[in-house]
Image 1 (cartoon, rainbow, N blue to C red):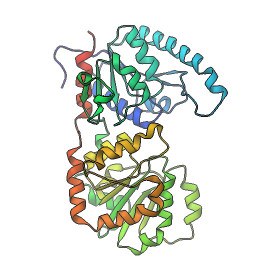
Image 2: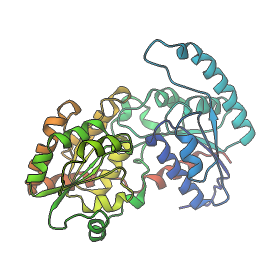
Image 3: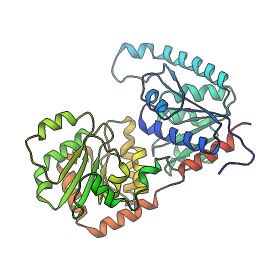
Image 4: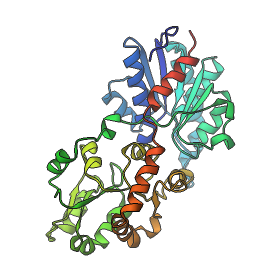
Length: 372
């Protein structure tokens, strides 16, 4: 609801690198525009990162900074990093002075560092939206100067000043979590059998090698059981899987490169197997289905395991570690589907963790601290 004494006219949103940073920022931008149709919103991202494509596709302008991350291996790119950082700081200062925002909001990722740093030096109020249960380095460095840190998980007082923390939840795509009354449409859309229980397996838009390998390893188990699988294999692996599986007549495994209607996929699922990215976890908490989380080991500071454990410790999800997934993921899923009481309990507990008003709450905080 729009604050009667505040009119947001110019807001800068910064961050990116992954969808987990970009899509929450777009959701916040959409809510700002809903309240203030004439507001000007400028995104600041990193040149060459996915936000430079995704943000314009969502209808918002973006400017790119030459900032980049430190490479783990010895490379010439690390030697020029200080120069990129310095150039990004000066460029961010120029952008902010020219646009003159009332507030700057950081969502994590490379670009938010220089953008929020310069905003603080210019006296522009800053806010941070932290998606994970374990904050990234950029947000930890920026937090002391931020007016508020909007978090998705409890227990972040060890990283941020408790007086600045506002537990809002993560902004998610509400259209994909609104699943009531869509089951019949989902069965038809994905050509599934309404009489069989359905396992939905999603490894992200690009897919997940381990999850794919787990399915292949247990194809005969799945085909001989009384279940069906809706499997998002990912763009990276689709052609290879076409070759590998071309000779098999699969009747209960339904593979797609990308799930276009996630709301329908969620609607038909009796059990969901997923990676544990922050935004995926936040969506799953609103969907309220039994979940097995297989955290990716290939993310900074093992964020996904920490996100998963926040649910597991509340008996709201089951954990299967990536190194054990090929052998154990499918048998554990079938076992869980056969335990109706466990499924009901997991569903009830994960729903308790959902925060459907996260985007609204974050924009309320932006209104509170934006300078007039």
